[in-house]
Image (cartoon, rainbow, N blue to C red; front, side):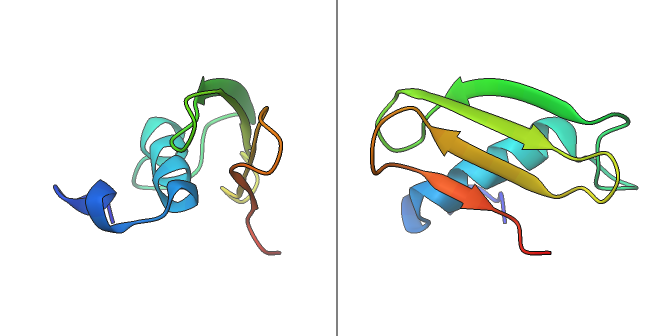
Length: 76
């Protein structure tokens, strides 16, 4: 999912999710040691994208501060 060239063919949501997972959900458990919240630069508009990565199950959520921009929530 994060091989070279991934960004050229993926959506802004997929790139944002991949960045959060790359930073916080590393092998072997693919979830952070503790629930993490933070802000990164939005992959679509460059605004502030706030996210949460759960320590319980590794699910992530995120939302850009710009109206009608990147937003996701991992399904339950």
